[in-house]
Image 1: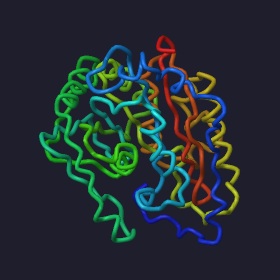
Image 2: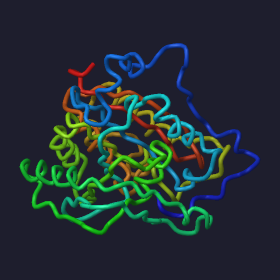
Image 3: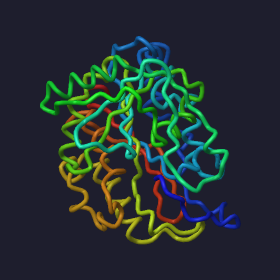
Image 4: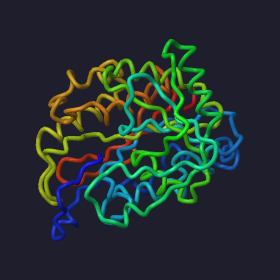
Length: 316
């Protein structure tokens, strides 16, 4: 989301819908992060392939607004060991805010610039910086994997920094900005199946300590946003619910064609740019990947922050 969102209703801020993570039962990740596994997902640990994730980053105001429920979820990322007790060796982000005609990776030697690709927001947001180091080795490996699997030629961009689909969630997840990050672009002229296959080509990165993040939005119709505290409209709730059922049920073929298969698909996503990062993350986890809903909340009546973990069955 890069446009000015509808002005929140201060009186209704408390009514933002959220589904908290139950606390009595340890999550699967917590069950797997004992002394014998804590180090395997950290820097240099590649004994077991990492999970992949789709994150709904919602509004850019996530960067400063503590009343957005998802902000606390992202801030808990490291303390809750969502992707492991230690930071990954590097991060590859596929964001809904970078589209090119052919796949492109940003190859940055040094620190990434912070791209403020949004307009009409509070001035403090334009002063935020996330100078994470680039990950040129991961970028070049990404290029190699894609070209080996028929997605070439893959272009290199040696100047582009991180767009807000990458740095806004990352500044909350890894606030020290010390994990190397690179990005891979989307091809909005292609479809979900294409991006799913593109994700499959990236799977070997998971065994090398690289965290693959798809950053988009579970619903993304900026023209239909409303004030906080108002009921979620039927079209948004039904699309969001269908996607959850399809992912948790392992219906990958349906997910690849969700714009046609899901109820209100074209309304929930007039443009597919915030949907395709999900396909990439899902594909990178493999055909037998299992999905887990790790966060769910709403703002502006229609923006779902539903976020998912994808785990290869053999890793369970």
